[in-house]
Every structure is written in structure tokens, then in C-alpha cells.
Length: 67
Image (cartoon, rainbow, N blue to C red; front, side):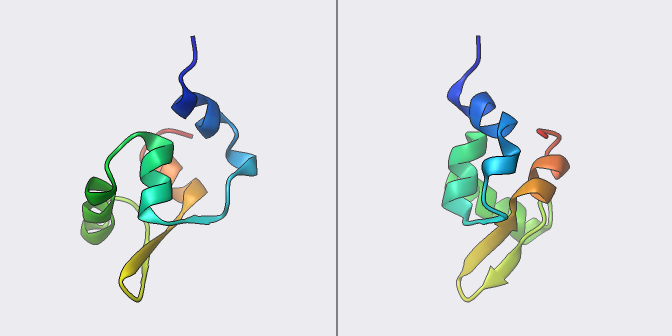
């Protein structure tokens, strides 16, 4: 039994190099606000571009132990 999240995460090669907090939250199954807080705390790697966070997908998944 695989969930939609696991299926998408297993296809890391097809994912964009950078994601917004909303895109990344949908991928890993967390809320966008929670992901934004994790970015601000440095829990996951991210760069702020204006008011938005950009998350390097592969590194962030590795940091969370998902990939």
C-alpha cells in the first residue's frame, strides 16, 4: 500500500529543483505555515526570496530523512 505522498517522494528525479513552501508542504504532507516555520528556524534548507521561501527539494527531503 502506497500513499500519494510516498509515490511522489519516490519520484525525486522528476521534481523541480526548487519549491515554494506550499508545493513542498503538499509533497511531504505538512501545512504550509509549519514548513515556513521550519525554513525560518533552519530546520530545512531554504532561501528567502522577497517574502517567499524557496526550498531546494532534494536537500530538504534528505534533511527530513524522506529521500
